[in-house]
Image 1 (cartoon, rainbow, N blue to C red):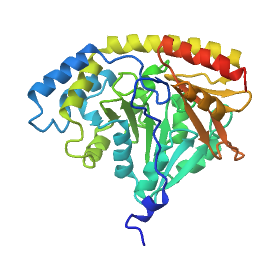
Image 2 (image 1 turned 90 degrees about the vertical axis):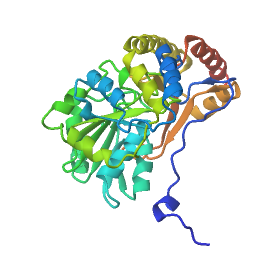
Image 3 (image 1 turned 180 degrees about the vertical axis):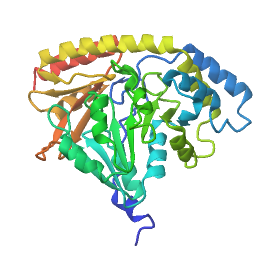
Image 4 (image 1 turned 30 degrees about the horizontal axis):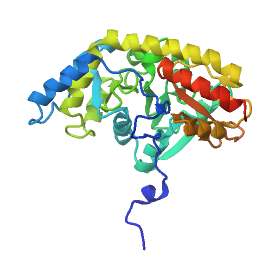
Length: 362
């Protein structure tokens, strides 16, 4: 029986999210969620929206949120496009700028959802390999950018936690397309915003920054993100989004979260302190830790038995992310390792106790 699906959909495997157990018996450090609750002002805003707004369609432009986000990035509100999670922003960008048969690029290894979005669109996808220092070859980047309509660059990167400089970004601007800086983890970086590039004459009509409230603002369950770009780009992308893509509850929650910067920064400081402690302890158990500017650590073990370590942690109800990237190195080797989200101090203590026992037996 022939398939009724488009050929592109029939061929693709689809993106696989991290495991989401539905009980509370787990130390869950696999999907980079914030271990701390959102600002109390979020719950207050949600109650207010539930009492007064649910019988009406939401503001299609999320105007209140756009005003707050614009102040943070020091732009006008017409530079901001809210979306149903950062992933919707990436979808809107793909649909806005790349036709079927055109080409999307991204550094590899990084966020493989970019590849899925290209496949859904019927676009070609090209990987820019990263070397052992998590850098790309400038000559390869120059060759690639001539072919691209979109270059997606997660900065800081996942799974490595590393960050590229503004100067390095200039090597990736497509000759006739857009550069997308996916800053899902930007608030955890030493320099949280690269928004100054948006006003650089080389980038201002050709670059989009995407953000999410899932990580630093503890709103993974709400699904809210936004793009920052020149108003000409935002106006075109607005044509592509759903009419009411952000619901009233999400808009209220996101606006309240963004307004309470003190709460976010307090939780950020706690996460960075725990990150430093975990990074200092892991080498004693045989792990190599990649320096991170995110709320997670990418680590490899001297034995290379990453899947076994992951499985033994899971048997103890501790979830981390085992990740495997085929053809990840310039010479075609497979790369695998463990990505560990930074949890509370108590959760990290459980991980360290478990790892001490596990690595003594492998």
